[in-house]
Amino acid sequence: GDEARLTLDNLADRASDLVEPTLRLGVTGLSRAGKTVFIASLVHNLLHRGRLPMFEAMRSGRLSAAKLEEQPDDSIPRFEYERHIEKLVNDRIWPESTRAISELRLTLEFESASRWSRWFSRGKIAIDIVDYPGEWLLDLPLLGQDYETFSRETEARARKGLREPLAQEWLKFAETLDPEAPADESTIRKLHQTFADYLKACKADEHSLSTLPPGRFLMPGDLEGSPALTFAPLPGLPEGPHKKGSLAGLMARRYEAYKTVVVKPFFRHHFARLDRQIVLVDTLQALSRGPEAVEDLERALSDVLACFRPGRNSWLSALVRRRIDRVLIAATKADHLHHESHDRLEKLTRKLVEDAAHSIGDKGAGFEVMALASVRATREATVESGTSILPVIVGTPINGEKIGSETFDGTRKTAIFPGDLPANPDAFFRHLRKGGALTQSLADINAVRFRPPEIGSADDHETLSIPHIRLDRALQFLIGDRLA
Ligand code: GDP
Image 1 (tube, rainbow, N blue to C red):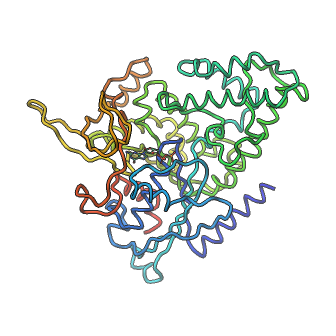
Image 2: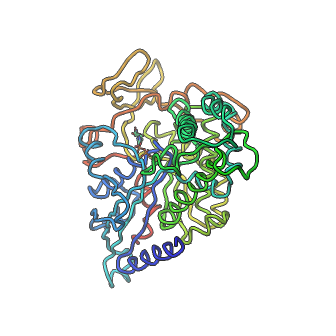
Image 3: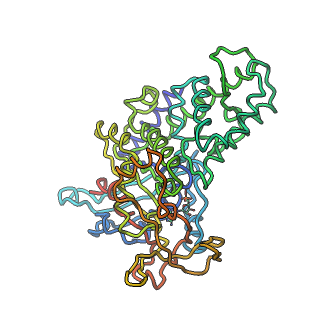
C-alpha cells in the first residue's frame, strides 16, 4: 500500500543519493506568486553564469559546471524550461504560470572548499527542482476535518466581508436543495460549479484573496472533472450520518475520496521527498488590495507553514518522514519598488509569517525571510521635481496597461513613482487590524505591470544573463551549504 510506497520512494532516494548526492528543492507559492519565473531565471542564471555574487560557490570560482539532465521521475512532467526561457528572453513576455506539479534536474559540479575533501574528489550534486501549486498545501487542514465541519467553516467564511457578495450564487442555489433528498449528477455539477466560481472570484485580481480550499478547485492539475473533485460544501448542514444516496451522503463520500485519492498521495509521494523549500509570496499584491487581502494571505501562509512542522499535525507526521530542514519565505516582485523599500518589504513579510515561523523555529528548521525579484523588469532613476529629487522606476509597461488616461502598447519605456511601503510593520498591522484604510501610495504599488527586460541591452551591458534582485542570496540559503 501507500506505506510501502513511501518507504520505497525514500529508499530509492537514499540509494541514488549515495551514487550521486541529490537535493530535492520544492518551489511553491499561491498562483501568480512567481514560481515559473523564479525557476526559469534561477536556472538560466546558473547555466549562463549570471551575476550571483552572494552565491559563494559562484563568487569564489568553485562552480565548475552547471547543466540540465534527465530528471529521474518518469511519472512527473518536466518543467518546460526551454519554452519558458524562449518567451521570457526572446519574446519578452511572461511565461505560462504553474498549473500542476513539474520537475527539472540541474546538475552542479564544483570544487570543494576545504583542501581535505578536494584531495578526495570534486563535488557533484543533482538539484531536483520540484514546482507545485501552493494551493495544494492549503488542503492539509482538511485531513483533520469531516465533511460537516468543512461545510460549516467554509460557509462561515463565505458570509463575511468581501466574500459575501461573491458567494451569493452558490449559497442561494444550495438553499434550494434538500441535503437528504436523492441527488442527480446535473444538480451536483451545478453546485460544484457555483462554489468553484465563488473561489475563482475571490482569487481574481481585484480581490486577491488567498485562503480558498479545497486547493484543487483552483488548481485541478490533471484531475479536472473527476468525481473526487466534483463536490461542494453544503451550508447549514446538520451532523451526519446522512441517508444513503442522498445529496449530503454523496458529497460527504466524495469529500473523503478527495482526501484519500488526491490530498494524501500528494503529501506522501511528492511533498514527503523534499529536502529544502522556497515559498514565494506576493506580499505586494495583497498590500495593494487592502486589509482583507492581507489578513487572508496571513491565514493562508500559516496553513502553508503548518506543513513544514509535521510534529504538530498527526496526519502529516504519519505521511511525512523526511524533514525539510530549510524553508525560505520570499516576497517576490521587489522590482516594483525602489531599493530603499526592499528591506521594508522583507520586514512586512516577516511580520506576516511571524506566528507560524515561531513554531518552525522552535523545531530548529532553518527559516529565513527575504524580498527578491526573480526577474528585474525595471531600473531605478531619479527625476527632479521643483526643488526635490524623487526616486522613480523605469520599465516598459505591457501592452494594454494604463496610467491615468494613457494606454501603453508594450514598446515604450516610462518612469513611474513606485509606491511606498510603511516603515514600521508593527504600527502598520495594528492600523490594519483596527480597520484602518490603505494609503494611496500603497494602492499605487503594482498599479502597472512591466514587460520582462531586454537582456544584453545598453542598460545591462555588463551581463547577458537575466537581471534579478537577491536571487543569489536565496540560492546561497537554499543550497549553498551543499556545495561546501
Ligand atoms: P506562478 O503562478 O507562481 O507560476 O506565477 P508566474 O511565475 O507565472 O508569475 C506570475 C506573474 O507575476 C508573471 O506573469 C509576471 O507578470 C509576474 N512576475 C513574476 N515574477 C516577477 C518578477 O520577478 N518581477 C516582475 N516584475 N514580475 C514578476
